[in-house]
Amino acid sequence: MKIAPITIIIIGFLLCTPVSNAQNLANGNPVKSTDLGISVQLYPAGVIPTINLERYISENSSLLFRLGGNFTDRQDFSNENDHEEGSGFGGSFGYRRHFPFSKGKMVAGLHLDAWNLWIDWEDSNTIPISGTTYILVLQPWLETGYFFPIKNSSSQIGITAGFGREVNAITSGEEVAQDWIASLLLHYQFSLN
Image (cartoon, rainbow, N blue to C red):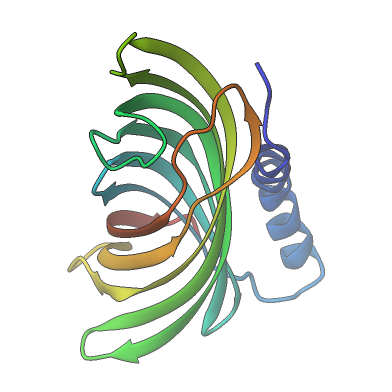
């Protein structure tokens, strides 16, 4: 089973974050906020549940790291095959800007996802054929949305919309779909500081 390079980077960041907070305290520097949470990304051909770590690098900007699974049923969306369905794992790295608005904050971000996917495909030609294709999907996308705090807690809930492009960077097997993608994300996160 192959592991995407972005997955290794995210795991490394997760392991180093508590150390960097301890070093900031020891040096007398203020600790930047770190949030941990979950999200569910819904798109027309599937769902992506993730665990998220958002590390603030300034008062109004942050880095976002996600690890999770991608479950897809492309139905008849594919131009390559009659039916495509599959799943896999991966993660993403992103940058967000935060803008205070009303009781919460607006966010705008740029992300890059990498997903290891195994796609089962079928074609119903005169002689039906089927198979499995491995792909490493790179998915650059833009995000915008709104987060609002949960009263009397250090938690927040958010909803964001994303738009990007799926690119099959590595394909082992028959060609499968890659296309533009729009999604809706639901978030819950809480502060670790």
